[in-house]
Image (cartoon, rainbow, N blue to C red; front, side, top):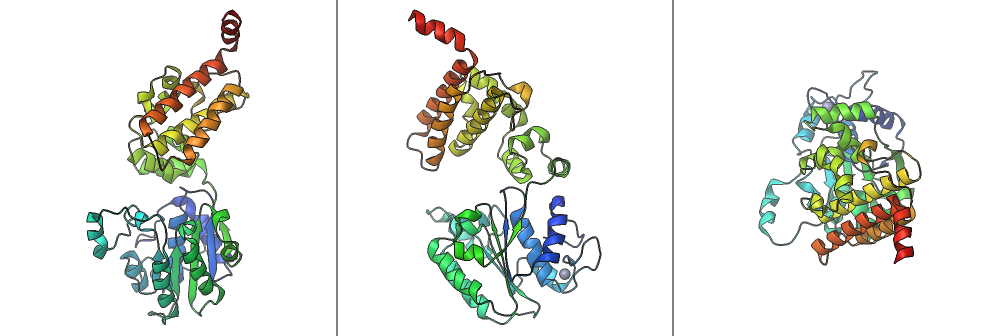
Length: 350
Ligand SMILES: [Zn+2]
């Protein structure tokens, strides 16, 4: 959101924000595109702009929230009576929207939900029917929209179909195809793609991310993801060493990472090795850090094994063994892909 200094939290959102404020016609928008580039931030900036009582007239920042009016202050302190955020419980704390009254929930044994539940949507219906407290607008932000379960999505649909006067919705989703078609068809799409390289790199450096260039490439150009990886302990040096450690069979290279992240890293590595085998430039690893496999077929078998593992990554049966096995398969695939001739000699002699 915009503070009194009117500085955008993510500089690359300036153009998408101005464009959205200029072109949005529908009372419901869905910000869509890759995760990790600021969807949630853009949704909040739009909400704040709709609620602001003195929007900027500046041609550089048309209709942006002022950051200084009473409404903006309420928005910044998360207490605006005309703003409602539908967020899975699991994201409240990471995104800085934990509610004071909810802190004791941490002590409960159940894991916070990754879904937006029907109870939350029912609560929203009351909000939707009430009169706007400050008379400017009422805004509901839903993030990520694909976290709505089917029952919750159907309940939301009714309000999207019959918009009440001042009510606006901003949904954000990195998997718009997973939304109910009836929800999609009632929202104006607002695409948010990958930001340009230079501002992403600049922002990462301002966030104190070391090895920003390497980590930004590792994250596929998604700056927020690169920042999150850095904060979770991933270092550029460890990333660059991964290909050689795979070649040497050092499975300990992944021991500090969660299983989903480790599988994801191997998938990116496999993807790059395949690109190199096909004579293309790698996407996620510096070219100099990669071996030069000549054959794709052994790597394709590894790729399939990784894909199967990724589907079950949230429910590991025997995480340690699985990772060792995937790593060993990768080492073997790389060896075969790099050194076909000696393999054939071995096979002929054996
Ligand atoms: Zn304002």
